[in-house]
Image 1 (cartoon, one colour):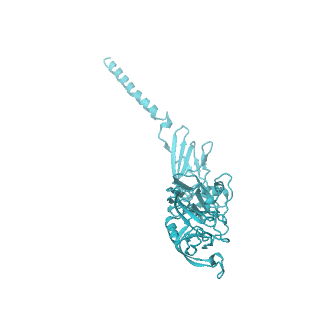
Image 2: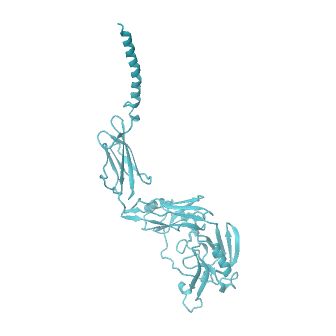
Image 3: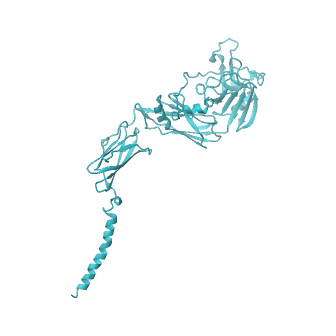
Amino acid sequence: MSHSPRRRRTVLGCALLLAPLVLVTACGGSANPLADKPYDATEQVELTSVGEGEKADPGKPLEIEASGSDRITDVTATDAAGRYVRGELAADGSSWHSTGALAAGAHYTVRVSTEDEDGAQGRRTIGFDTSPADRLLRVTFGPQSGTYGVGQPVTAELSHPVQDPATRAVVERTLKVDSQPPVEGAWHWVDNRTLHYRPKDYWPAHATVDVHATLEGIQIGGGLYGGPAKPVRLTTGDRIEAVTDASAHSMTVLRNGQELRVIPVTTGKPGYATRNGVKVILGRESFVRMRGTTIGISEGSADSYDLPVYWATRVTWSGEYVHAAPWSEGSQGAENVSHGCTGMSTENAKWFFDTVHVGDLVRVVGSTGATMTPFDNGFGDWNMEWKEWREGSALAAGKREGAGPEDAARLRPLV
């Protein structure tokens, strides 16, 4: 009897100690399976479409199956670039398969979430590689990185032709052009291998334009996969624009809208009229030998010529230049006597040569000649209305088939 009170106190103390233990177990144990650390579901989940140590065929879907009473609750599959693969989970959670295409030559990480019959959560992470593509669609951007005038378009040359509109859309979505400051712009399919990109208006002065592609590894179609592409960065300088009025025999050169110089010129005479419209400077050559035979003028005819020409700024591939023409100084500012080029004094031609850069603008008005074509003789892109330009995009509503030049222009100098 003398020990009974002590014993009762001991039992009570044990009860007090046990109570919090029960609470801890309730908060961290099986009574709340969502709070448990996920179990390793390696034995419950299998990637059935890829054998151990093998590379997956990028042309076939991924397939994942759950075993026993476990069911799949979620699957994410991403490549090393962070691109997700779309997929579909069976209603009962027994399997999952991809519905989106895999990239070729890529590494993938698949994360699978499961749930057992008691509601406990499981996880498994699987890594695998896809086989490289046998045929790659490569893209080469132009021009090379550097500083250009505000009229310079961006070009993309494809290594294989792409005709199908849906396939063109797949390719075009991966071709990225980002500018600072931002401007509205669009790609235009010139032909099955060539795209041009330009803003709605000219690039802003002193802009930065970054061009890159996310094409690599993407399934294009017909066994063709996207290949690597070297990015380019363009910067623009001042807005330089030369406006030639062929009827007034005068060229006005502007920098950022401010007049720099008015130059007396001569342009193409009847039968050789200079093209109207906007042209983009393609290059500068301090010396060019110009011969009439290159544009079909026979030797010995009244129009035949063979001349050394200095300070020549090219505006078309067919041979139209702005250049020094000391032999026609008497006609400059008064009449048009050239074979299509814009001629001026040697002093003015040297000044023009030193002032302009590739990508700057030369606009001709008042000529009896045809308008500069958009694509087959240099960069006449700005002569196409914006609405029509947008229709040349595979992503634009009301898209049409891209059409390009049937024949490449010859390199023919005019004078």
